[in-house]
Structures are given as C-alpha cells and as structure tokens.
Length: 317
Length: 251
Image (cartoon, rainbow over all chains, first blue to last red; front, top):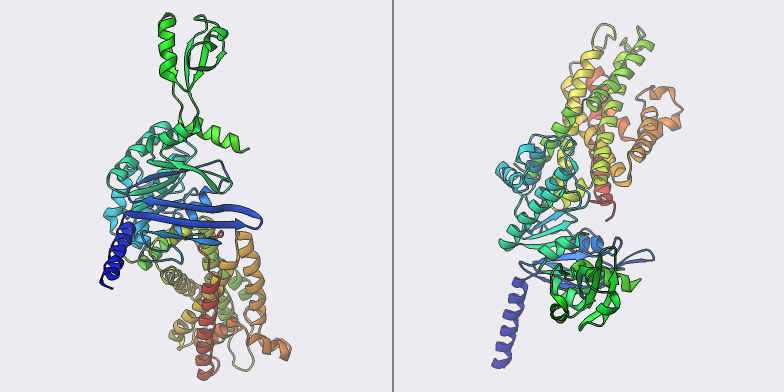
C-alpha cells in the first residue's frame, strides 16, 4: 500500500515536472473544412524555451495548426494544451502568457502606432511604458506618432510583432513575421528573436524563408497536406534527407567522365565554366582532388535546409 | 487604464478623426428635419394647437438615434472582425462585456450630442419647435432606446461579413421600422392593424417616450411603459447579439 502511494506520488511529481517543462502539447489533432483535411493526426510537444519552426508549402496546414494551438480554431478531434491549460474556450488566465502575431496585421483604425499599442497594453492592465518598450523592441520608436494607416509594409509587420510582445508573453506565436521585411529589417528581427529565446521564451513560428529557419530554429517541423512529414533539428533534417554536398571546380580542370571516376563522387555535371561534383562523402572527394592536381579554385557547397525541404516536398508530389 | 476605458478612448479618437463619418452621422437627421420642417411649416395639430413640428421632430430624432446606434455598432463589429481586430482582442484578456460597454458609451455620447444639436436646430424660428418642461425625461428613454438599438446593432454586426451586408440588413430593418412606428408619418393615419403592428417595434416606444418628454403630449404611465419595454428589447437583443457574436469570421 505504502509503496503504491509512494509510486503515485513519484508519478505525480514526474507529471507536474513534465508540465512545467512543456510549453505546448498537441495530441492527435484533426481539422477538416468540408471535404478538405487541413490538419491530419498531428502530435507535437514543444518544451519551454524552444524555438520551433513550422515549414511547408502554402496550404500545408501551418496556419490552421498554429490557430488551433492559439485557441482561435476548434479542432475536430485531439487535444491541445499550452502551459498546461486548454486554449479553447477563451481562458483569461492563459491569455496574458501567450502573444500572437497573425499574417494579417490588425490595428485600431485612425490611431497612431503608440496609441494602438497603449490600447492593447491596457487590455493586459499595463501602462503606457509597456507600449514604449514594445515600440523600442522592434525599432519603431521614431514612428510612434504615425497613424497606423500610414505606416509602411515592413513597419506594419514590426508593429504587429510589437502588439504580440507588448505584455512580454511566455509563449510567442509568429505567423510569417518576416514576410514583408527588407533584408536589414529581417536581420534586426533575427537579433530580437534570438534575444527573446535567450530570455527563455518559447517561440512557434512559420516561415517560407528556409535559410532563416535554419539559422534560428532549434527544431523545425515540415508539414505537407496537413501532416508532419518530419521533425527535428535543421542539422538532423539535412542529414536524413540524404542530400549531399557539391564541389565546384573550373570546367577546365578535368572532364565530367574523369570526375565521375574520382573516389566518393556520385555524379558530375558541366556548366558554362564550372564542373559540379555531387557527393555524400565530401572529405573523400577533396582528398581525391588534392591527389589529382591540387585544390586551387575549388569551392564547396554543403546541403542546406532548403535542399532537404525541396527533396522531401518534391518526393511527395 | 481598464480595457473599457482604453476601448472607449480608442473609439472616441477614431470617431473624432474620421470627420466625414461624424459629419454625416449628425447631418443625416438634420436633413430629414429640414425636409419635414419645410413640408409641415405653419401647420398645427387641431386638438392641442401645437405645431406639427413638435411631433415630427421627436420622430426624426428617434429614427436618427436608432440609426446611429444600430449602424454604429454593426459597422464597427463587422469591420473589426473583418480586419482581425476582434481576433486581436480575443487573444488578450479584455472581457467581451468591455467591448460592448465601450460601444454603448460611444453610442450614448453620439446620441446625447445628436439630441442637443437636433433640438437646438429644431427650436430656431424657421422650424419653431416648442420644447416641453418635461424635457429632462428625454435622457432616460433615450439611454434605453440607444441600448435597445445597440443590441440590434450587435445582431446585425454579428451576421454581416461585409459593409454591404450591414447596409442592406440595417436599412431593411430600420427604415420600414421608422415608417411603421410613426417616426416619419403619424401612426394615427395608418389602418388599425398596422397601428397594432407598431407596438411590436422598439422604435415605437422610443418615439412615444420622446413625444412625451419633448412635446409634452401623452400620459406619464405610457412614458414609463415605453421605458420598461425598451429595457426588455435591450436585454433580449443584447442577449441574442452576444449569442451570435464571433471573434473571427473563421471561427
């Protein structure tokens, strides 16, 4: 009896520890719109402090999935918990802990950027300082007095992100936050997202920029037709994809036939002025090239998350 | 600042910065007042000796209040939902009651301003409206009337996805109601069964209350009945509006 009680107690402790360390728990989620299966049997656990990317072609179910986790859409079946609580129906105790940026930026009409943020801050019982801080965080302090209808595309996106962050939430949902940003603003946002991650926040985001996902995410999930095809660190996904590296050398160095005989080379193709060697054994190829006549003018290209993504999505269709 | 105060402030600023909308909200009833004032200029009601304007003005005012309250909230709700602004609010802890009460505060503000301006214009010698000594009774019935039509606006705003839908549904409801309640033409001119129909409409009670308070005609009992019935309409319409309420068109 005593043993059983202890065991139960230990199990409870383990469960509560798991709950404390888990930001998001998604189990067997299904959602269809009429005949269209938008999300099919998706399960996902996101530990606290993780930066997770949801990738996939348009219509893959990313937004539907993220909106079910936020509590906006009700799943047909399956369960979602965020910080141990159900996001649906609307839970006023959970809402201050999550921040949501949607693809369509929404602002109070006719207000200035700072007035809009002050209004949102007041919903959380926060003062004007919160609005100023959020503006500074996204680098919009100079545009504080600009009407929301007059801010440019990139600034709108940054203001939408500031809206999601005004109350310093634990879990942050960003749906294509870098879509309308120029390269410099995109890098600035990366810096901000890394700071949020360093501060221990959990970030769930969707993007079509695979270089960005590779750069920022701890793990990425690739969705296709409502299912998670693969989930792992960017490095794992590249490894699993079997996409090799490429070695580029001047076309004059050797013929493609010659190149194919080198140790480790899977294939060789000739372009205008470059010979491209495809390999999954980069070190062996480089060694062979070194023996053959030196590495002058040789460049290497390692596989990227984008290569892995295209390989995976391409294999589906 | 509470969510209610923040929403009221945001809506107030939006209203005062949207000059075209604010202008026509106030000009619309005045245009009708002018038309009816000129049509019935100098004519008197035989039994009381009052000018027709004393009855026409409360009618146009009642319609103006009903129009501003129901369309104001219906357009805002539809537009806020269409623009994902309601979705933004949904993701914050701001209570839905604060969203509705902020709309009520704005509608009451617009209603009071509209009333003052309207009576100010109606009493100039050109129209020659006389205001009864009971005029402070305008306030209670007007507040209840605005609450009832705000409830109606909540329903229209919940079922409409586009501005066109708000216009179509709102006009289909409010304009026939204005005629059938006697806001534009006296109910006494209608067949008896249509007069009975008018008692199913909230505008009839707002009109009765305003006639009592402004023209000094009718019984006190009827005034308080009007207030009671408007309270009932406000409760029922608001309950239906909240039941139909959606944070997002995709919900």
